[in-house]
Each structure stands twice: as C-alpha cells, then as structure tokens.
Image (tube, rainbow, N blue to C red; front, side):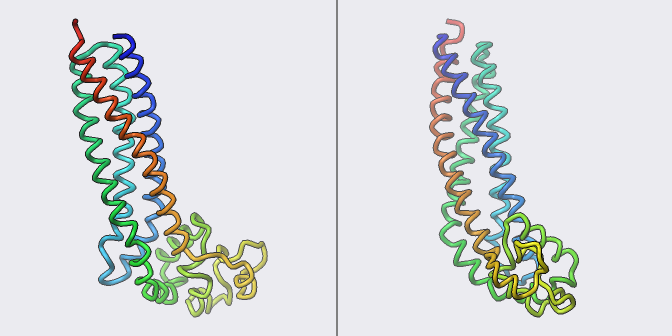
Length: 239
C-alpha cells in the first residue's frame, strides 16, 4: 500500500510541475496573440479561425492551473487515504485529460493552415500599417509592443512602413527595425535586415506547438497512470 502512495505522490508531483509549464506556455501564447487580434479587428471579413490562437493560450492556462491543483489534491488524497479526495481526483483528471485531447486537436488542425491563412492577410495588414501606423495611437502602441516582444519589424520587413504617417512625418522607421543605436533611417533599416513579424509569429506558433506536444504526451501518460493508481488506492482504502 505504501508503495502505491509513493508512486501516487511522484506522479502528482510531476503533474504539478507540468501544470506550471502549461500555464507559462499559455501566458506566452495569449500575450503574443494580442497583436494578431488587434490587427484582425481592423480588417473586415478576417478569418475567424485566427482569433482562436489566443483561446488556445487561455485553455492552456486553465488546464495548467487545474493540473497544479489536482497534483496537490492527489498527494493529499493518497497520504490521508481519503476516498472522497481520490474519487474527486480521478474524475477531474479524466475531465482535464479530455480537455487536453480537445486542445491538441485544435492545434493540429490549425497549424497546417496558419501559414497559408496569414499569407493571405499580407496585403491587408501592410495596407493597414501604411494607413494607421503613426496616426492611430492604439494600433501604433500594439505594433510597437509586438515588435519589441517578438524582435521583429513590420509584417514582412521595414518597407511595410514606407509611406506610413510615422515615416512620412519623421523620415524614420520604428526603432525595432534597427538593432543599432543609430537613427533608424532607411539605410540602417535595410542593413540590419530585421525579419518581419509574420515569420516571427509563425515560428512562435511552431515552437510552442512542439513544446506543447511534448508536454502533452508526457502529461497524458502520467495522468493515465495516476488515474489507475488512484482507483487501486480507492478500492484498497480501509482494507
């Protein structure tokens, strides 16, 4: 019986840590998708599927938080030999497992089409930058924050800002387009060659999908094992 308790505590300790990782990745995805959602708000008839990127981040945060709580609950249930806690642990872990499967399906369906759909938005986003960057404070602020976070410049590159209110007024380009300390004029921006936010965002999605996939597989295996052990403990409590 004590061996099962130790196994249960080890499983739930790992699940607790994995929950923390899921929350961290979810926060990163949700924050990075803010720019995309703001841009889509300015574009008519934008693909609704793209707006779900941020929802995947929120799903990860919710699942990670529940996993952390369940890891604590599972350890307490095993050590205290509480049938109620063990049964509650089993039910909630089963629900979380099904939610993870749903999240994995969304990611697998979205990833192959992300690059294609974002490419179709290329001209619309560039036109929006040339029209609003430097004149629309909200859009300008979001663009600057996104370029700073993703270390990118424009949608494709610095040329997206050519003819924008900011560039026309100042004869300069955003500081994110130049890594050097000098004034970000066209010559410096061209020499720096900072990549566009489109490529940075797609790379972020791919990196997070790979991390999430590895974490999800590990968590799924641990959850199945933990559910089995919790049921064995549940049946043996009091014997």
